[in-house]
Image 1: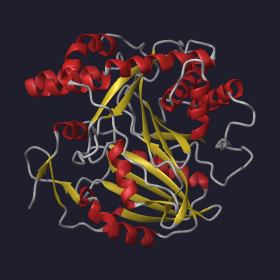
Image 2 (image 1 turned 45 degrees about the vertical axis):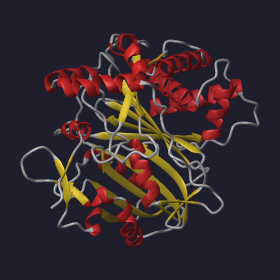
Image 3 (image 1 turned 135 degrees about the vertical axis):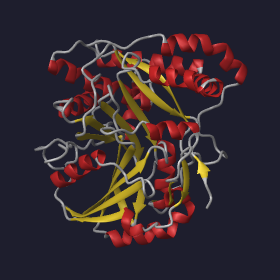
Image 4 (image 1 turned 90 degrees about the horizontal axis):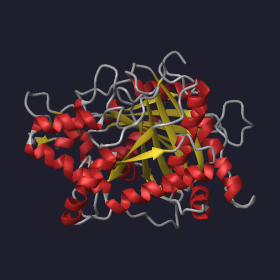
Length: 445
């Protein structure tokens, strides 16, 4: 039996799972047409040869955690037919999926097939453990297993983060550590212990609109800057709603360091920290402040420097590595985690049917009871919010705040005819599309 040890990074991620914290992420894919679980299984079985990680399980024997082939592997166990649901039922299923641990006796992934939905659609709810795949790796797996470029579309190339020289990293280390690890976030209402229930929400917008907002801003902003600023505005609305101080909100932003030509390791992420100016009243000033800070992080090569620092600590001393890891997860260091993973830009097909939506969710952590996962694909960008259902009341306020910030920036920076059509996912809104996925209420929904 071939035994492959988990990397130190993957093993740390596996160890974060606890009685109330789950270790998986989730992709929600909605496609046109009615498809069965049998059709999904047939396609996956044809393509799993390109993703062998999904046929391996954790070695049950004692010792360092390792992957081994699952002798009892069965596609039927992993792809389950959930039958027809309405949109409220789908929201409840997605929230429940974030609450339910994956079975460690088998490969750490599962897919629920919900069909039909209203409007003759099908939803795939795919969970995969973070120890198996980080955001970029999971997106590559999705592309290999499920997504096909529509006819006439070119396959996208995997983005990579430019390397910085070791000499430059060494020179920037003291300043980067002061900037990233020496500053503190204010303790927020999100800094509480996580319970077992989850609530989810989604906001969806045209990707081109965020591009246009960034180009039109007085300080040039990237799509990621616009998205981070919108998350800050959502938090501003929620903090104001509950009467909490509007200051000291700091986000941890994962940065993929995967490079073309490197082996497909599960996790190769670093991070940067970005202070969100939620106390600033003007949306354009908020966006400018975020853009300036992320530009400085890139100029200093914060992500590469921090990756080298933490990797080096692990080689020197496991005790030092654990202490640094605990500090890096402190709510005094950051308020919440906000990830952004780019997917294929053009129209995509799944099982031969047009992909209508792609959403992503990531698990929360103790004392970080809200997590935002941003993903772009097929010309759309989605903000997926996952929260402790008992700790974060009115998750819809955060979702509304994100949407309102994008509206405000578009109104002030873009000509009336320029913004693309933004789907309104609010319950009770005039239906411009069949789904209403923004809010799920966990168990008992």
